Structures are given as C-alpha cells and as structure tokens.
Image (tube, helix red, strand yellow):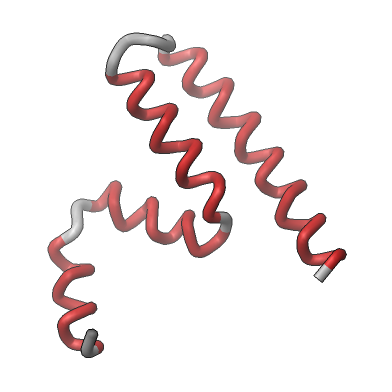
Length: 73
C-alpha cells in the first residue's frame, strides 16, 4: 500500500483506534487485552472499577513482558 493511502486510512480512524495502534506499536499483547476489557465493560460483565483495576494490572505485566523480551533478545 502506498504511503499516501496509508496516511489517508490513518486520518479516517477514530481517536480511540489511533490510541490502540500506538499501544500496539509499544506492546501488541496489551492491545488485545484492552479490546477484551473494553468489550466486557460495555457488555456489563465487569464494572468500571474492575475495568480500571484489570487495565492497571495489564499495564504492569506488559511492561514486565517487554523488559523480559529485551533482555532475552
């Protein structure tokens, strides 16, 4: 895909989608977990407090995983 086409696609994304792309660049696993958390919250499976708690735990574990990968790579 040409760069111009890619830039146009990026411009059309919603702000939350752009944030997920940035997170993906940092740690792909955290994005999949975040999407699942958002969906569970929107369906009422978890409360807002649980969502924030899980989100915090995921961020910590993602940082640990990233550091571990850097050391072994």
